Length: 234
Image 1 (cartoon, helix red, strand yellow):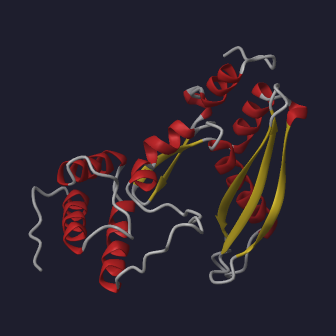
Image 2 (cartoon, rainbow, N blue to C red; image 1 turned 60 degrees about the vertical axis):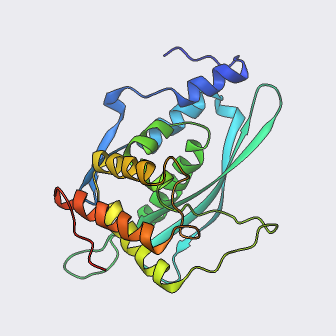
């Protein structure tokens, strides 16, 4: 791929979101599913080639061990990109890294690497909003992005709906099952919802009904076991 810094806006967008050669992609097994990801070095290299070394930077807003679960390190970064037309764009990224512990002592092996891992993950998440590696996120985690509720900033002009406790419990059960599904099974679950909702919007915790959740849980369970049907005993 021949990328030059003197590009139009559409060319920059196309070059940022262009698929990477397969040899640059890595695979990891997570939750029983094989997920493809990009090393942070490839993300940085893409930014350097398309945007220019001197035209992008990132700032670490925060990076610390989670207050509730200290075995998780959470990082928040701001990615700033200066486009050729003089427009400065800032993208936020939130990433995480589990603390690796020694099996013998249970003590952290290298917290420095865990902190760097969280920052790298946050930078990749921010870069995804520019299109870098976004095709991988959608192919591997399509249901996470479309079927499950996103972490969103709710506009102050929109009232927040109080979720019924029964719906909340069933939703958590559905999300737990759906996350463990393979990418192929997630697509089947997506097709099931499209059919049941007659092409309606993706289910959300604030809008889905108990009956709809019963169906989603049953279908997700069927797919997880490779069954032909699941009897939903209410």
